[in-house]
Length: 487
Ligand SMILES: Cc1cc2nc3c(=O)[nH]c(=O)nc-3n(C[C@H](O)[C@H](O)[C@H](O)COP(=O)(O)OP(=O)(O)OC[C@H]3O[C@@H](n4cnc5c(N)ncnc54)[C@H](O)[C@@H]3O)c2cc1C
Picture: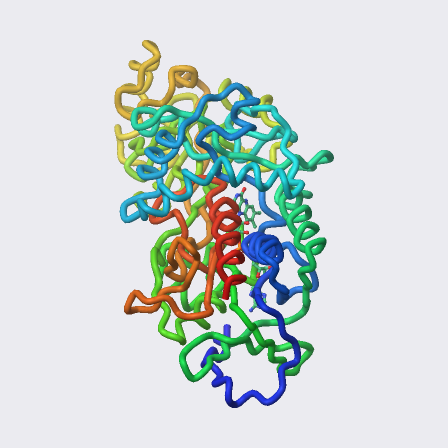
């Protein structure tokens, strides 16, 4: 991939502006749309520049989880009690070492209001809880555990509550249309009704800077030519992550190299690099979401072992945590050991079976399986023996899988080869204030420049929970729009 030139353009060199607005937003995904809604509400004239032919971005393709809590109306309607303190304690533990406690506190305190704001924009939520293991609800249910809150170790740290809020997609077809669309459509309609304009097929390339260092516009490419866009009050960068910029991934998050997932090609890091060229600072560039490509209905019913035949993570936790543990701590090597009865039960429970994986090996005994898999003699046998012994008592002293999933592994027994079965997207990006101002390497805001969504670093440091990206993207997108509108 050829890196685009991001050298800032001096405003004095521009003699003609092709377009202008008070607030110019780059990228019409979730952060851009949320910024547009709030900027027009604050009275600004808003122009959103989008590289593709339509609004939506990764957000419109997303499963639609929005991580919210602290006692939202949806949580209450589904019968769950949650508090800001529990949500904060969970996120401080789950977002990984180095997570920004001030940002987490800010986000948790604003979470109930943010949910109400989404509803006021017309985002629909069905007051029904989905309690099965899964990557997302099977139907149009609105609430689900999406971060392992009710599994070890988080259930010992904070009172669990489901916080994955999912917009209702009435005619949902798994693997086709997704709930993220039902987040994006109302947001874009609200922004448009407020007067926000969208300009499509415009690829933003570099920032235009006044002699005093203030960002006053953008240079972009449209239909093979240059266009200049003046921003009277501020520019918001909302162009997404760098998951598809191979050079940046190799530099900052090499373990995810070659395995982008849950992302789109347009996430090429352009917005991040444009701001870097002005001295912007970065944060959490090594953080990634990591999915493991298997149905959680299978995961919970088996045991996951590494290349030494040993268990390493509770199989009933958030599958993204399983993915991270596998990629980062087990050299991307995992095998799911599952017996015939459990496999059949999993097959019967999930519909459709998009991520259901057939066993790679099936044997009568664990000893034979261990040999077929090429594991060290005795390694898997001792793992299964100690798991079975405790499972008889419905206990898991090693990893604390919940009792409901504990059953001794019987015969026939199979294993799913999950080597190289992970993928994900990057979470790091521009360092910003809680008002979404982009900070430079000296810790000072760059005047006129804001960022939100995955071009900014958000809540996640190393860890992740489903819904964090649409959550902090929309939350801090709003902040960016509101503060840019003030000029
Ligand atoms: C299949 C799938 C499932 C997912 N599920 C979830 C989920 O359930 N919950 C969750 O929180 N996250 C989920 N994600 C991730 C989430 O969608 C993204 O992290 C989120 O949309 C990021 O928001 P954003 O505004 O930064 O980027 P986007 O929503 O992708 O918006 C960025 C926009 O900027 C545009 N753009 C890029 N470069 C330029 C440029 N140079 N000039 C102009 N425009 C540009 C892009 O075309 C895009 O429209 C999922 C993603 C996928 C693909």
